[in-house]
Structures are given as C-alpha cells and as structure tokens.
Image (tube, rainbow, N blue to C red; front, side, top):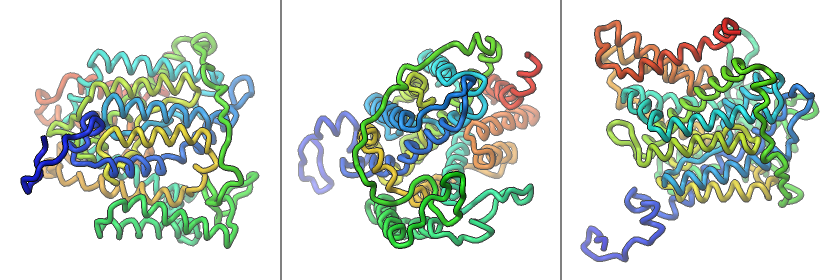
Length: 483
C-alpha cells in the first residue's frame, strides 16, 4: 500500500504501473503517452527519409529499392523493435533505421554488391553484436569507459541532435566553399518561410518550457504544424526539390498539407530478401572489412546514444549504467538483425527519443505508444507527411539544449580530461557521426593519460577498443594494404 505525504492511503499500483515501474520513476501514464507521441512525431520523418536514402543507390544489377516498399518495411521494423525494446527493458528508447549506416550502405556498399547481399552483411553484423552482448563483452566495454567520457558522449549527442535540427530546418546550410563550410540560412540569411516557422516553433516551445507547461514540446509541434498547414494553403510553397529543380523557398522532406487519402496498403515484399552472396562476389576479406565497419558504427553509436538518453532521463547511476543494460544491448543487436531481414537497414536506438524524454517519458510504456504508431504508419503513410521537417526540427534543438546541460558534471580543470572530452563533444556534430566522436575521445584519452603517467588507471579493454578505433579510422588504407 502506498501512502501520500498527507498520510492518506491510495490504491495499490496497477499491473501496468508495476510492470513498467511508472510511479517508481516519478512518471504517469499520461506523461508516458505524451512522451511516446512526441518521440514518434520527432522520428516519423524516417519513414520518408530512409526510402529516399536507400533508393538513391544502384546495385551491381542496376536495380533500386521501390520507395513504397522501403517505407513500409521501415515503419514495420521500427514499430516491432521499439515495442520489443520497451517490453524487455522498460526503457523509453525508440528504434528505427540508423541514419549513419543506411547512408554508408547506399553510398559505399551497394554498387559493389546487390541490395539483398548488403542486407546480408547487416544481418551478420547484427548477429555479432548480439553475441558480444549475450556473452557480456559489450557491457564490459561499456563499463571500461570513464564516467567523464560517458558524460561527454551525452553532451556531444546533444550538440549532434541540435545540429541535425538546425541543418534539417535549413537554419544552417552548406556553403559549397572551403571556408566557411557552413553558413546561416540561404545566402547568409534566414529568409525562407519554412525556416522562419522553425524559429517560431523553437521559441514558442522554449517559452512553454520556461513557463513549465505540461506537454510543451508536443504543443509546440502541434502549433507549428497547424501554422505550417495554413501557410502552405495560402502561399502554396510546395517542395524544395521537385523533378531535379530546386526552389529555396520550398519545404524540405514533407509539404504540410492534408493528404487526399489517409489509408494505404503496405507492400512488405522486401521482407526476407537477404543473401550472403557478397562473400563470394567481392571476396571474404572485402566483405569482412565491410562487416567490421558496420559493427564499429553500430556498436558505438548505440552505446553513445544509450548513455546520453539514460542520463537525460535520470535513469543512469553514478557509473553511467542504467536498468537492464545487458538486455538493452542484446535487443539493440537484434535491431540490426531485424533491419537486415526486412531490407530496412540496421535498426538502432534513436537519439530523437530524447524528445519524448524531454516531454516526460521515463518507461517502456512510451515505447509501446511510439511503436504502435509506427505500425499504424504502415497503413497511414500519408499522415506522416503532414508534419514538416522544419517544425519537427525545433524539438531536436530543444532536446540538444537540455542534454548540453550535462556538461556541468565534468571537471574541466584537468587538461588530461578536458582534451578527450572536448574532442568527443566536437567531433560528433562536425563529422555527423556519434561513433567518430567516441573514437576520437577514446584514442586521445588513452594516449594523453598513458603518456602522463596514468597508464595503470586505464582499463585494458579501453586500450583494445582504442586500438580498434585506430584501425577503424584508417580502414581505407588498411583495406588497400590487405587487398
């Protein structure tokens, strides 16, 4: 029996509450539902973006993946893995196709091998991750990371999330020149209506958060979307890219207009289209190097994201561990297996889950909501296109700012700590990769600490991982040398 501070008795917690530990984590069912909804809204773009990325490549047989089929399996895999993770770990971390890996597959892998062969490599990568997690080796690596670097990973991911939001909203754009490589808006000014709506949504959400309004992020997203629909209805801005023509004033991935039809029947024809023929087509050595690259990216991207999200949710202990860590690492590996089996690319924990955490999500119940919405998205794909990327990006910047606050826990007086922390944080957004930032931090930590007379304090596993990252960063020359 629980007792309120006033001394009055309350009813025992429901089975749902006990299973997901909702009250124990200071949350409510309402907060979990809102958080799950916000996470889905922040992630829904993947149903559109993943097909764009994976359909952009041509395999050795000259074929490409059908957009509609990729959208269907993207939503299916994200929904199943998000629900599975929520049930097994009771954590509010949603899953979807990893952006780093899908881009790598489309640009660097497909073309040398077919789509089914590329998915076979993803599946092998996932099985290896599951094996490492099940044997406890992956957790040992997690435990070997110093707390300062774990905190730096959180901060770096916060900057990475914010940078993604700023780029997706075209508040920051590539200049096309060597210096500066990026600039403000279009032509040095924030002059487009979609980007201005991003700014409005960002400031509105910030004000709501300062005023401690419940559902601030969700209200901001909803208000920004309604405003965007009205703007599109009045000015008919249309897409930014259409038939290879570029209109700087247009919308990004999605145009905020009510769809003509709400329901579409998903085509799941890509499920099971997997082959291990790459080991024969390009040779065992070349295929193994591709798996190695996938493994490192998957392994450390997920580790960094887990660290950042668990600290942001207040679920990490003094060592940076969080509840059911081993189970989380195993299920994350299964995400790669599922992604390969469905041709949706490796599925992994998504940093956009921080949007739901910022809204109050603390348990796996939020994942049930997010995953259920992804499964519905298979049938209601047109609805996922209503929220424009520019509006959804505002929530990413908000979450990035919230995660940035974790830097206060790092003692910056020791330069042996400061440099690795700084490199971890800055390399992530600048290279658009969580794994790259972790690698830079690990290598610099080992080198600086060991040459400063602190070698005994470094875990032997950290030495091994740092050496692995050296090979990872030099994999181009290594492949050439071994080839």
